View 1: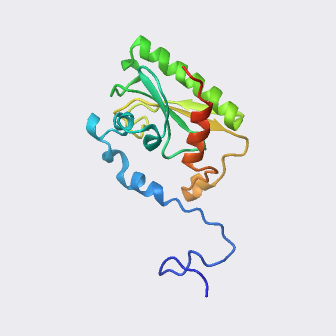
View 2: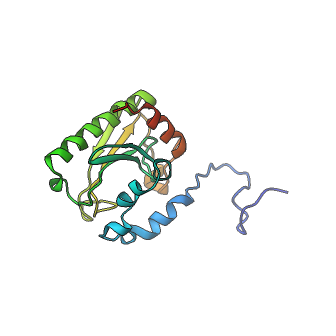
Length: 181
């Protein structure tokens, strides 16, 4: 008898297809932008620093900004640099916050180079809902490590991304390699 996981008699039945199951993303996909209000009480980037680093996947806490693993990464090691202040726009950063924001971005790139050897990076901020921000009310910058051949048809055709490491493994590697202050 073959192993089955549901009434459709498909999952677990051997065939020619490799299946990538990503049920953890369903809450994010179903909730959309509406799951994040404009207030600090339901903002994931305001709540993250109130919990332990391990629970929030924080790899570094600075004076005015922190660095966290993206819970829904494009690639292993996808980091986010966030100010502690609940602000929506890059122009809302103070001069001191801007300097630390940039410094943490550079350090994040150096750390990822040392632990994962990417051949490139995508850096970016999506500003506002129209600009594509997943959490528009709280500024954050993406640091996405890239490797030759890491893009394929799966995200476009199947809305599925193959991630080669668990968040816990990546968190351990990045946190361990982050330089001491």
